Amino acid sequence: MTPRTHRGVALPVRCYRWARCCLHALEGVTTTMLVFPLVKPSTRRLLVKRWSGRLLRILAVQTRVVGEIGAPQGNVMVVANHISWLDIFVLNSVHAVRFVAKSDLERWPVLAQMIRGAGTVFIQRERRRDAHRVNHQMALLLASGEIVAIFPEGTTTEGHDVLPFKSSLLQPIVEAEGHVQPVAIRYRAVDGARTVAAAYVGDTSFSTSFWRVCGEPALLVELTVPPALPARAGHRRELARAAEAAIRTVLAAPDAGSAPDTPGGRAA
Image 1 (cartoon, rainbow, N blue to C red):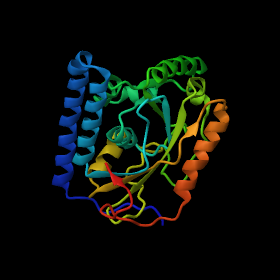
Image 2 (image 1 turned 120 degrees about the vertical axis):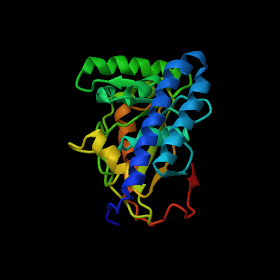
Image 3 (image 1 turned 30 degrees about the vertical axis):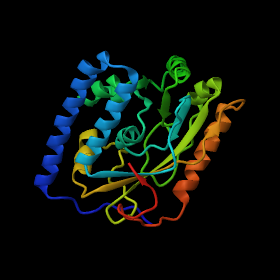
Image 4 (image 1 turned 45 degrees about the vertical axis):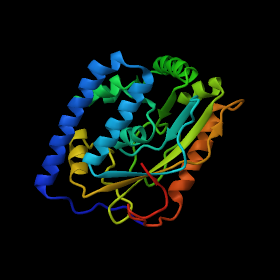
């Protein structure tokens, strides 16, 4: 089924969502600055999960999960395809994780402070030495039982297919002898058709993408979770190829065209 966009909501509704999101973002920044330093990590993860869920509800974004993300004992690296800035909040609304993200996000107004406060690790991909720093930091997080998430394509796509995965950031999970958890992300419109409305690609600015999402009647995000891949005695390139293949298989499957209220997964 060909992805397509849909007629937007009325301008007052779009403006209302925009204003609600701005207030919600300020609440998130305040929480990360004033509350996070005073609470334990498990409480921070719960607050991140709740905040992300509320953001999605404001934007009329529903999440459906097929499978289970993460493990109680941690030591898991979530590896997902990357379509939108929404991906971060969608995954966090299901299971709060520590993200590795491009340093470009540090320039986002307001949200950068919140994302940083939530524990995101920023990387300058063009600097090889920075990858070593981030890998070391990720290894420490995994060893402490955290779940770390990466987007190994290195950029966003419209979600039709998957770009080749870069394997360098998978080295910490190999050394930690944990598991790689592939997650396939797909966006659908209110009628169940694939949509590119949430895609944050090319020269599109964040403000333009945000305004477009505010104007969607509703969005459904499907997270399909193939079986986890054991990293023990593996090689990062082999793991990257296996995770890429698993996600590519999900995205290439024929669309069922299911609408948001159709059974077939677990709503988050």
